Image 1 (cartoon, helix red, strand yellow):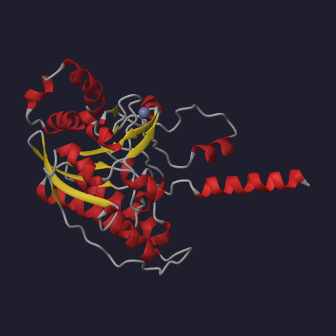
Image 2 (cartoon, rainbow, N blue to C red):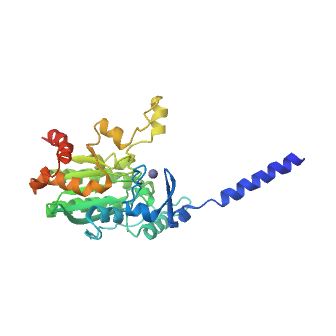
Image 3 (cartoon, rainbow, N blue to C red):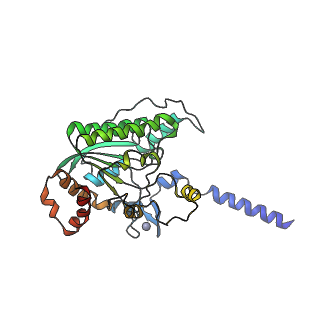
Length: 309
Ligand SMILES: [Zn+2]
């Protein structure tokens, strides 16, 4: 019977190992983050704009980190967006939706997943929005829809371009049809922006999927993306099982989507301010001296300018 005892012992050891694995909270509060070459100090990654210096992976960042990098630390103003009634459907699964909202707000310091700010890029006034993936997977419900529409209305009222950094898994199912209706509402709002001839620039970040790609995020006048970002509607495995074909390894990544024409330009995080500033100067015919700043920049944008004309 020794073999039975041995097997049971191994089972117990595996259980203990699994119990000792760090939780999500442990990982979030740790000083370390893992990447291609093992653990990296978060401090070092932060100094490099949360981009791995070895593999160039663009790690996920929250809205404030995004705006601090894009505008410069605190060089922007956060706009108060409307917050509709929480949990209109009184949703309960393993816990209530109200509890989930409370936790997400505490974790991110935001009232909804979307944050809208105003600031200046290349001396041009802009309205900019971003989604925090850490707020219930960046999903879009009524509050997020309202925030996006508020941002677009702010752009129209102040005649500024609208720039958006989407991420997230799609519509928030705790709000079912109310969340789905945000796809139509945000799409109609983007149409208003276009009627007013205001530039709408999207910069996809990792990961963006579902109803977000199926509505306002795919309607940009220009679609930029950070390197290696996952941009999809349905997941790769679902598509592979449906079409019964082997899909390319980088399927649904920025680089592949650029080849297919869905993405106009891939821009590294450190260059976003400069490149979007240059694009705006071309689109608005302002600060034109920056257009000839570098040959590389001119080359990047010549194909876009051609496509736009
Ligand atoms: Zn790496």
